[in-house]
Amino acid sequence: MPNHFHGIIIIHDVVGATLVVAQNQQAITQPQPAGTRPAPTLGEIIGAFKSITTLAYIRGVDELGWPQF
Image (cartoon, rainbow, N blue to C red):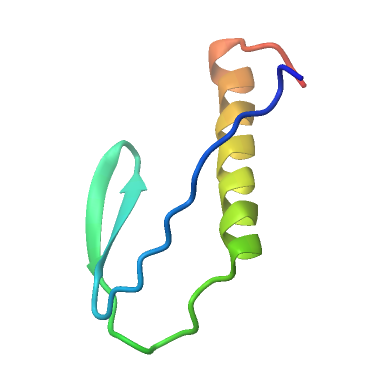
């Protein structure tokens, strides 16, 4: 199947880590206080990845003339 890929997800358990968020091609760091929300599940991580990549592809279709799904 040409429409998939394989990857490895490594989840680190780090207390008080800094989250790096990519926004408009710039990295923004946001401190994350420990224990303010529960850790995301593997399903939530994969769902977020799929959402982000789908939106990026739709932008490529609209702005760069990529073929539609």
